[in-house]
Length: 317
Image (cartoon, rainbow, N blue to C red; front, side, top):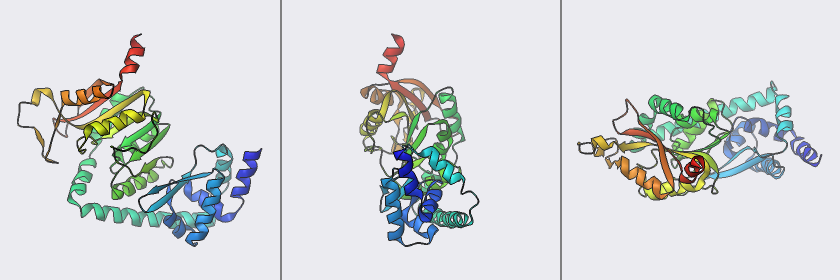
């Protein structure tokens, strides 16, 4: 009763209802909400605070921006969904959504332009644009597996997170490039994956509590890291005991180690060897249970799956 009354008091105002309808599309920055509602920033922020205090909305900082999203821990989710469903077709909210779509398109265009002006990120973006083989390998490895709470480290432009998110109970991506975060959010929202969230973080310092995720994907996070052990340590820290770690990266096959393929031309960085990756994983208490090299990208592009050694011991008991 008290939760219901608190929820009703919080949403019983037109501007707050309009805000909730916008946030139902995914996480939105304060600046974007100001443009969509055509209201002042102090007024919008005041309404947002009331919604946060009521437990209906949560927020997080991303660089110089603060993003808001519907709270998924709220006990009033059902009631809120029913209220928002009743607003479908409302002319004022439809206009808000149209303005939000336009500002998102402008932000996405800006993100593309910033990637094109930075050669390294432009190159990475072009590579990530062809991910069919990676999607097939992930589907094959994860068939009949519940992803649960999913984390993608190096979300890049969001293609793989978008592919996996529908199979997960919740999906979170971390990406250090602001332009890539904007593209990932846009891609996820266009796909209707409003509950996904993208955060500003690097793989060597994840802003999550221990044992937070059932599935962790390292998407070329190791080959781009100066300290591979720290990235794997963080991945192992946030992984639950019954979970699985996926490493999608440039890994040199043992049979090719004596050939002149010791450097990856796309980055000019030394490749990890198969046995080196296995050793690094073992140091974190993880054992490789599956590996495959992806066709079409490179003879050295692979997907590894590892699980905690403790889980293997339980299965064998």
